[in-house]
Image (cartoon, rainbow, N blue to C red; front, top):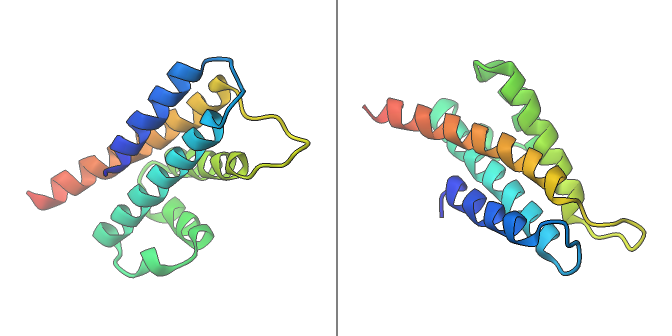
Length: 125
C-alpha cells in the first residue's frame, strides 16, 4: 500500500470515530499515519540520496531539513511524526488523542506524501 493509501484509511478512521475516544481507533489511526510518513520518507531517500533510508529516523529527519526544498514542510513532518509516535504508545494515565489532534498530523503527513509522490513522478519522466 502507498503512503497515501495508509493515510486514506487513517482519515476514514478519524472521520468515523469523531469525538468518541473509546476503542482503539485513535491509536490505529496514529500508527497508520506514522507508517505513511515513514514509507514516504523511505521513498524520498531512495530517490534523492540512496543509503540515507538505512539511517535512524532522527538522522533522516535532520537530513530532510537540508534536502527538502520546503523546510517548513520538513519541520512540520518531523513534528507530525513525533506526535503520531507518541500517540502510538499507550500509557494508562493518558487519554487517546482527539480527532482534531490526529487530523492535524495526518494533514501534514498527506502534504509530505504528496510532495514525495510529485517528486517521484517528476524523476521518472
